[in-house]
Image 1 (cartoon, rainbow, N blue to C red):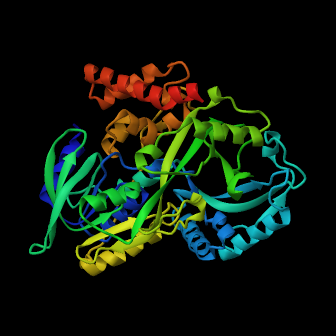
Image 2: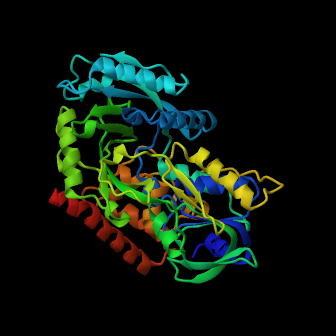
Length: 501
């Protein structure tokens, strides 16, 4: 077991925390960063890896909610545009402005003048802080688009994450590691109770990797568990006026054309929706789908229908159809959509507002976050901090975060031109414990290299075994079991799906 984990586990047991956050996705991580900066004693836990749920499957767009204009939800557009622009201004090391290109369908589709008017309205709703939209008939990406048509394209500006959504989450967490600031992945809260006399939660924690247990104490709990918020609330007897509907979103990772530099937006015939084609390193992400699912577990499996639908979209919009054997990676996540508990409707997910809801329990020091997006995470967490300040006196001495990624140790991986953080660095600095932690979330290897890093014909198996050797502390028996388990997962999640599609 890694030294840092032993240490953090002891801190979790011995420190009396002001706040425990359950859920280490983008909202939980952002809140952890803000509370630690203000001097609160904070325990952050996640039953899996940090950024291991919905936060690892976004399109990495920091956008102002353009599609919400179709429902005339101008308030959401204004709010998200303001949040987008603040992130671009204040987080230039992690978020950059980026031009997006909307390519109307040459066969029907939206009227060009209406599209241009909508983009100008979008620009106005963003208070003119981004570049003004403009039309462009000649552009580089036209060489691989099936039929650009006489409408050309319309260009407008959004923001995008640098690197990946997972590393964006990790950079909120990594600067704060101390006895009073404890992040623990693979740590589940099994149960707990609140003592009104002590004004403390006593929480039973379980290490889901190393099978040990302990008790932690905190004055308040914030439930940022994303798609599992309802389950956590149910386990603790917390009732709220909201619940989550779950929408599955799938992207296909395809080889990026050398002329593809700008994110593309294509018309889709269904629901008046669009499909995006986003350049990301050596690949391009095509998607996402929008499908309501009943459970989070159902939402993290790509189906044959998902893959076929996106391949059909590729055939419709790209000059050269994509064969299923050309798929490099699959990206699947679940969006939590906040609705009233009385909601019984059956509708298309994009018709549901993406607004978040912060709910403070009337009886207990417990706060739940419903919904939420990467774009609005900072403002959302500021509101939660304001609620917490009414429950817990604001700390007197703010804390300055430590440096992050100044001296990252880089290494090479077969098939990638871009170097990646070394496994040793990720083990000691970024809570990396498993092979999938490293290949999927600390690096982009499993997304940029075929078959989740193994290669088309297992040609990278030796490189993966070397990584596993370090993660398993050079125990050869554990390495064999680790790599075998990973290959079985790749076969189930990727190979079998491609064979069935």
